[in-house]
Length: 472
Image (cartoon, rainbow, N blue to C red; front, side, top):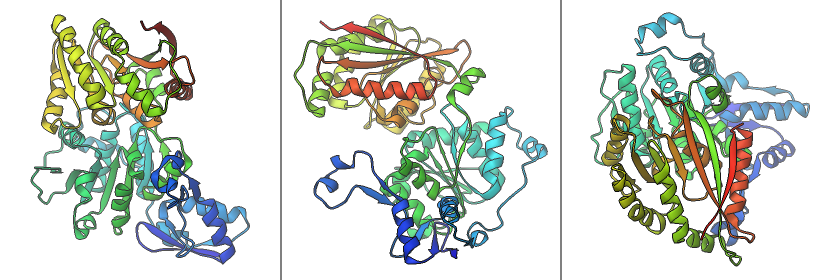
């Protein structure tokens, strides 16, 4: 006999014998990708694994109840206590009259209503839906439906402002408390905050919310974010939204444990086929360098960002593109600054506008860039931005081209970055991505990263072409 007991709104306890406990401990243990490169692993302080079940306390996240249930039943154990953990939370689907009373400026799409109805059945859900699918509207519907004291946690200050504006556009009239540096904190039914600011809140504040929503929830595997959710012991209603997971099982299970089971709302390909978002055309551009000796990863990156002919190619490419272009880079001083200096005369000749955004750019200035590009009559803006500021969540509809100026193999970063340009506007039906890779004519890292990105494109059913150019 196996019995589960609810401890709080974060953890449950599995009452079982020592043998099954050991099996659960092993089953819910996962090796972290690239753990061998981490200092704690190299210094032998950590074995590189995440363990979601405690052998000492028999505690595990409540959100993993379905996995524990399946694991025990497959081994012939009777399983009890489920109702004690999930409670009586199932609700009926929302009526059309309730939706009509919200007076939304447009009709929600069928998949948004379906995701919303699934989420309210038990009050816990991890909604997996790509950029431009309207996650903020789903969040708004959930917030209005429950009508409880709610905190929405986002990764950046720009997203605090953007989410606030989205709610106002949907028709929300009451003041929204925004928490980040320099903002006034006041009591409000809805609080929108960065996780950095919220992590500093006193324990009694963290535990004062009835409902928590984690936007861009893929970032919640970070220790600080995980700590926030674990401290909210009395917050029963939990939802996470994200455009993508990183593909590892441990990442998915951590998020499901904190928020609830995954609900795949819709895919980017389905949105393209239905005409909801712009079609995506990917040009994988391989730059052939003169033969180089084998380097370490960091040596290779330093070589690439300082390569004049490579930077000139990017400058010429951006200068040849029509419409608004977002260029994403990784290193500010090593790469962003040189590109900015090269872009300036090129953009001036074309009578366009160059915007340079990185970590040190104020939130107000980032929001101003987004507003300028959104409202500009001329489509000749170039946004040169670091991945950290513009790869996740930022909503700029009038982006026609995206250029990956720095190589990356991160599944999340790549898919989130692609999403920056997929929103449709009047006259825009296609977005072009220029994925720049490098062949050093040796066994080099960044060419291998391109292969991993192509695997992602194949998995997402994105069409792409590969072109090669020799650098002089």
